[in-house]
Structure formats: structure tokens, C-alpha cells
Amino acid sequence: MTSRRSFLAGMLATGLAPSATWADAGAPRWLSAAGLPDGGFALCGIGADMTLRFRIPLPARGHAAAAHPERPEAVAFARRPGTFAAVIDCAAGREAAMLSAPEGRHFYGHGAFSLDGRWLYTTENDFAAARGVIGIWDADHGYARVGEFASGGTGPHEIRRIPGTDTLVVANGGIETHPASGRTKLNIAVMQPNLSYIDGGIVTETDRLAPEMHKGSIRHIDISHSGEVAFGLQWQGDEDGPALVGLHRRGAPLRLCSAPEANLRAMRNYAGSVAFAANQRHVAVTSPRGGLVQIYDAGEARYLRGETIADACGVASCRGGLLVASGTGDLWRVAVGMARRAEHAALMWDNHLVAI
Image (cartoon, rainbow, N blue to C red; front, side):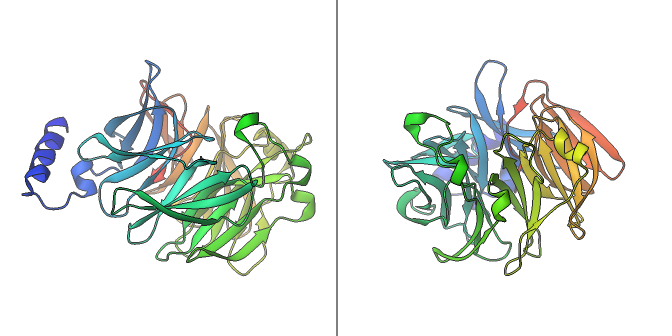
């Protein structure tokens, strides 16, 4: 892969090569940040066979990434609250640019590209005003910062685009923070999480949990092929939360998924990531604190079963089911009634698997 990258970089420099594609980066199926044994960090490309396709250094710990829809380029975001986002040329194996959050802002660890790949949208904290914003960056002109718009709430975390459209969905966690207070949560008693739908920079729909669920911080989302949103909660109360997974279709009420009390308690009030399975009928939610992956029926909004996987967090759809990444370095392919493991002992997978 190194020689291939060097050859491609040379061809591109002379203008003789066609535009690079993800095939030139080893045809990865997913991206994930990872910690290294020497204390360093990297962005990794993972193939459909769970083998490593590339490993490219990051300046600090990463959280999630955004994959460009056409060229082999990814933006790796710092663990929140962070101020850097590294643009990675995954074919050449190098950092192409470094984005810095504007003064008075920090990143929340996630971003999404527009349908045509021209714009990168980043979730950010306007901490002086205690409001969430979405930053706009021009991916065709060196990722210049060109503006921002309101996220529709406080503490925006994950942002996704409804497939085939430029409608953005934002998980506004509802939690106010400020760099002067580190990661301290400043407004738990009055937090108001929501899902916001944004078209052309305008919030066109906002959907909130019931008042008794206001401590359920909506953190992570996935969107099905048909536009249904699955969301994972991180409960901020001292007591156990009544639900950690929900579903939503635009224009309809939010639905919370039911689970037996013992199974819900085992997640330790923490959903680390959420994803629709390949069949689009099942939704998986992970808990690194509980060492669990739980699977729900999306149609009936109810718990189906669980898998015990130590430090499980990143999860994404794969052929036949789901791929789960663990902080132990393992990748698990989870299908109905079975789980298969691939070991990457030199890596500690971070929070998210990002599909390409």
C-alpha cells in the first residue's frame, strides 16, 4: 500500500493521474480513530473483510470522522471538546489540512458532508451564548470557513444527512458546557435535548422528548435508507433512565424503545453509538460502560437480544448484520445468532465506526 500511495502521489503531482477514488486508498469500508501502543493516535481504514487498509497518524485522540462521498478524503475530529479537525488524504497517507475551530467555538467530535461533497458541516459549541451552531467549510477551496447556522438546540453532538438528500439531522444533547469548566455539565436540571432537521441552513423541524425524559441526552444517531432516525441516549439523572434508544420519522412523534429493566440497567445509562443493521429492521446500540451490544426491533420498538463485548462502542452496518469495534482492539461481526472476531492487538478502537 505504501508504494501504491507513493506512485499515486507522484502521478497526481504531475497531473497525469485521474482523480483518486476510495479504491486508491485500499477500498476501505469503514473509518475509525484508534489509540496506539506508543501513546499516539491514528485514523484507520477497515476493509469489508475486517483487515486494516491504512493507518494514518493523528495529532491527538480522535472521536469520529466524516468521509468525503467521492474522493478518498476524511476529516477526523478531536475528542470533544476539541478545537482541531484533521483533513486526511487517505490515498496518499498524509494530512492535507488542519481545521481550527473559530474563536469562541469548539468542535463536538462529528461532522457530515453535503450530498455533492462541496460542504463540510461541523457540530460546534458557541459557549459564550450557550447555543449550538453548525459550521460550514468549503471542501473544494481548502476547507475555508464560510459561515455557520444554528443547530436548533444546545450541545449538538452527532450530525447526519438523510440519504439521497441535503437534509441534515442533528442530535442536540441539551447539555451546556464551557471550556472554563472543562467537561462539567452546567444545566442538567433544565436541559432540553432534541432532534433537529435542517434544510438550507434553516431548522425546519424540532422534536423533543417528553418532559419526564428531559435528562435523556440525545447524543448519537443513524439514519435508515428510508429516512428513519435511530437515536441513542445518555441518561444524566442519578436514578436509572427509563430508555436509551429511540426512533423517529419526520413529522411523527418520537418513539422510545422498550427493554426489560435488567437489560436496560446493564447498559449503565450510556449509549455509545447506534446503527441500523444491514436488514434495516434492527437497530444496535453499544455501551462501553456496560460491555454490551443490544439489538432492538425497529418496527416494534422493543428489545430483542444482547451480546457481551468488552468496551464495545463503534458500530455500523455490514453485510449480514453489524460490525462492532472494541477498545480492546477487536472487531466483531455480529449476525443473528453468531459473532465472529478479528483481532488488531496494536490498536485501541475509539468511539465510532464511520461507513464510507
